[in-house]
Amino acid sequence: MRLVRAVLATHVRNTKLLTRQRSLLVQVIVLPLAMLILSTMIFGGVGDTYPIAMVNQAQGPQAERLEQQVRTVGSDLGPYYEVVETDYARAKEQLDWGRLHMILIIPADYSTTNRLQVESFNINSDAAKNFRGRLEVVLNHTPSPDSALVLTEEMQRVRPHDTWRSSYLGGSSVLLALFFGATLIAANLFLLEREGRTRKEILLTPLHPAVSGLANVFTATVMAMALSLLPLGLSYWIAEFRVPLDRVLLTYLAMIPVMIACAGLGILLGHWLKVFRSAQPLLTVGAIATFFVAGGFTMVAFLPDIAQTFSFWWPFSRIFTWFSPYLHGFEGLDARHVVSVLVAAVLGLVLMFWAYVGELRLGASRR
Figure 1: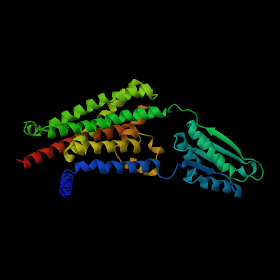
Figure 2: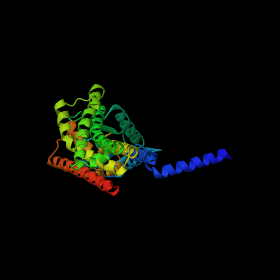
Figure 3: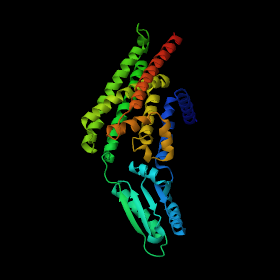
Figure 4: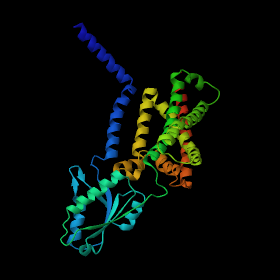
């Protein structure tokens, strides 16, 4: 009986501890949910349907049968293709940026020539094998009474803005190190003030305690840039990263306002979450979500619709959708981008000041 009472008493004590220290439950709850949400966003839960364009310029039952076959052929996981565009001009624009696997054109003389035209993007060999294999399945299931189908293929060759997949991931890892490092370091510095028992001294100084926050933002920005040199060096070494150093330097300079904004947010989260055990897992999961679903793992245009919607509303997605093309030389930063990141930096400083105002109020209430 004593053993049972001891077990029950320990259970009651543990329950009370978990009730009081809710931060002990945050990571247990958030991480599995985040992995579930991220997995379904990235992989879609609908197999591996390829987005394509199909332009039917022919008339007659033979062309209609082929179009129907393209739309319906598939496996147990789902259809092989999803026809997302039927206008050639819009489809061509999307294909040029790699947003479609192919354009399948059914010419006006298809019923007499049995000739099809395919335009595809510059894709790797494995994807090309899948693409051609699926198209062969479509053609094999399409009756051709007069003669065999003739396929004319045009592939977009390597373009000046092409980059290695590993190089893209290398650049994303550098951007992740910059904004996540600034956020987490600033939050940790702020929490060290509280948990290291220096909070009271800071609040009692003649200067506003937000001065300490400015120092934390500065330290977080500098340290994040220094720590990001590790993924940057590894990217040059093992990831086919070939970005010129001057472009890297310009990207670092352009990221400074973003890091200031993230550092200010980190301080506010530290004020709100109170302890390391809450702040660190939340910031980590947020960074993981941003990386996988907001343009770090792959371009947002390649992601499922739900991920693209998330990326549109998630402000941190701009770090990857704006700065990855800039880093690799795809696109520049226009005035709208510059103004936005400067406004973000100011907002980050406001959040930092707000956090220290909250600390002052909290300190006054405990006197």
